[in-house]
Structure formats: structure tokens, C-alpha cells
Image 1 (cartoon, helix red, strand yellow):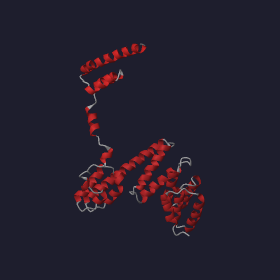
Image 2 (cartoon, helix red, strand yellow):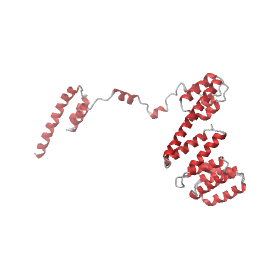
Image 3 (spheres, rainbow, N blue to C red):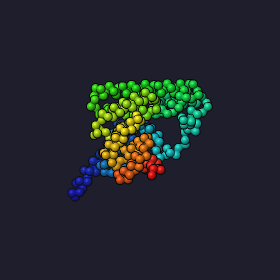
Image 4 (cartoon, helix red, strand yellow):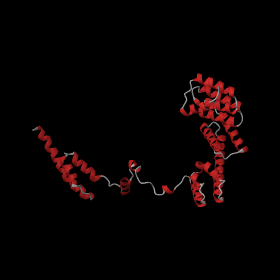
Length: 295
């Protein structure tokens, strides 16, 4: 009897909610399917609540629904038919070797409208192309890249002049100079000037601010400037701070090879055997190649 007192009110509420569903649907201009109505009827209380949620929820956007339906399956995408234009395309490096000037000019225009800093080697090769128009485009692009790089460096210098203790700005400036040097666009006095600027900025970093990468960069830059003794001192400092890292030892071997110091290479080999260096695969390959034939 007690159970019936509970069940009868629940059944009445359930029936009232079921009767309310068509009224709600008519006011919203939405009609539940027969299967949805059956689900609502068989599931006490919770079924009609689900039906109300369906009727009262806002309709999905047509554009979002279309995008969901038309979105490519990432697993299926690898099995789709290749783009018909793919068969007619060639790498840019090979395009400049084609004897058809029109193709070379089209590839050059693509470079002009993309990211020239990612294709500096290709642009430098195109400067000496037989087609004068291709060579002109390449030279103009490299000149513009150089002008923009110089402006960025000047802005970084101005920022450091106002905030000399800004470590983040100094590191960004160092990376800019390094990228400019590595671009291959600089020669002679211009290259020496940038290397001098790089050494000045690196020397301003304290030992705590000089990590392994910056330390190796300074050693390489000093060696390129012809200051082998200073480069060796910088690399030796890194071996004391990072004794088991391979990078400073590789720099020391590079300095010894550049200085043609066979005795130093022999001494380095003995040092490295005692240091317990954690060699990577590529680092061990370089080490074995440099020490090959050193007895």
C-alpha cells in the first residue's frame, strides 16, 4: 500500500509530462519521431525530460552541421586519390635547372610571395641563373630580405640601449645575428662586423646566463674570427661546467683540427676516455671521424 502511494503520483507526473510534449513541440514547431516518443513513454520521468531537452534545445547551425558531415576522416585521407596537380609539380631546386624560362619565373614568383628566408640557398643559386628575369627577381628578393634583417637588428639594438639588463631581448638579438651570419649573404667586412657584434653580446652574458648552446656558439664564433686560443678557453670552460655533455668536446676537437694540432687531438682523446661522456649517435660518429687515424 505504501508503494502504491508513491508510484501513483509518479505515474501521474509521467503522464502529464508525456501529454505536455506535443504541446511544447507545437509551440516550437518541432515534432518528435515515433521512436523518440516511445522512448519517452517507456522511461519513467527521465524519458519525458529527455524529450523536453530535445524540443527546447536550439537547432544546430547549418554551416556547422555541413562542416561536420563533410569533414575528412584523417584515417581515410591517406587513401584518397592524389591531387592531379601533384604529378605535374617538381621541386624548386629542379625547377631552376629546367631550360624553360617560364617555369623558372613561375617558381621564382612563388618564392617571392611565400617565405624567402626559408629558401635563401635557392635564391642565392637563382641569382646566377641564365634567365635575366629570374636572376633579377632573386637578387631583388635577397636585397629586400637583407634590408628587412638590418632593420630588425637596429630595432633590437635600440631596445637593448634602453633596457641593457633585459636578458630576453639580448638572447633574441644574439639569435638574430646568428641567423644573419648563417644565411650566407655576408662576406668580407660585413661578415667580420656581424661576428664582432655577436662576440660582444655573448661576452656580456654572465656564466649563469650562458647555457650550453650559447657557450658553444661563442666558441664557434671565436674560431671563425681566427681567435683559436680564446675559442679553446671558452670551450674548456664548458667542459668544466658540463663535463659529460658531448658538445664542448666536439668544439675542442674542431678547434684542434682547425689549428692542425695533432698533439692536442691525442690529448683530447685520452681526456674524453676518462670523462665518461654521454655520446649521442651522431656525436659519436663525428668524434670517430675526427679521431680516425690519430694514433
